Length: 416
Image (cartoon, rainbow, N blue to C red):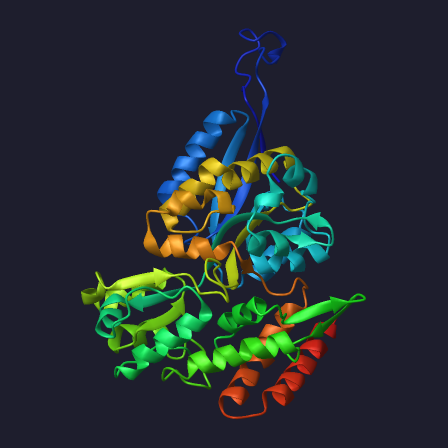
């Protein structure tokens, strides 16, 4: 969108007859790219820009870093605008793609993703929410998901030799850790992203589309089993039943107290160590366990996709940028630089040397995203899942509470 610059400026008719372009000259285009703050280091962006422009001599990159606060409204405005300096490539949260695609604001990248970019190999938690209908609009860039961060010293004190391989083992060792006078696990009562993983692991869903209509499904048998596992695990610690993982921040609790485990992204370790540097050699990581050994549990996958506005007039250049950033070379470079999970399970070896990221990558292979409807934002705005969780953890009948929460989700999803 936007600017096109002649590769050669006519300085004198006597030097360049008729001011014609010499052989090999080409029109230059600027590709404007919006990326979010902290998604990539400045050093990475500088290096990428230099090499991309060298490999694409007819393209210039204009990378503009955006803030997450208020980004939804800003992106919507850009998609509807004809401004010449608008973005040609935009980084968006993986669960936001449907919202932008619904209004025909995004370029359909299905052919490119099938032909050249290996769509079948992408992490499902990034690829699935990048689709709207049968078209691929969001191209997976990077992922992050929850793992279990644990205290190696507290495991040793309790006689726990190794991380668990199954959910049953996880409950058993957490009970053992809890019996030693520490909190076996700190799990806030309203950590609904963690609950979602347990529900998916049981084969349940938060909501499903049937005959074109979305309905809440927390009251299904599998979803109820997921909530029951959450209840049993949460009871082996002192996490508040009426608050989420940020109230208080679980990193603070873990750093200050004798807490053996938390469920969080590995990056949270930085906040823990800032408050308690003495734990530097005692932090360990393992994937959230699944029901069977050798298969990590399902987890919510967060992260970012790259999209191209439908109104771009530098389509080919925008596609080249997306292809480069999401391709194996630069995607693995980003993962190593920022401790992310690459966009394909086959690239996980690139982060195998870092324990926390390796655990995250193992879990990402079974990652999921929230239901793929633009109306899901209405559910999260007045989240009935959190209220449901607190009700169950304080003794309410799970089936009754789940039915009420599912009905509220259905109502929110029907709002247009």
